Length: 66
Image 1 (cartoon, rainbow, N blue to C red):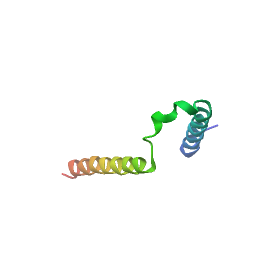
Image 2 (image 1 turned 90 degrees about the vertical axis):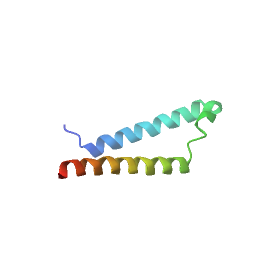
Image 3 (image 1 turned 45 degrees about the vertical axis):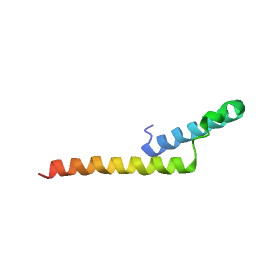
């Protein structure tokens, strides 16, 4: 049976969420290392990665245009 790409992505996401739940329940006192993971840091990461991907694709477009 052939799996579609979206199904595989959903399975990886669910597996990672399950892993985070298991880690969160079993290591409650050692999770202070993850305190820097906030919604603002995630938003900044998404924006920076988006700008980098845009610039790379834009330069590739300019290279192939000529």
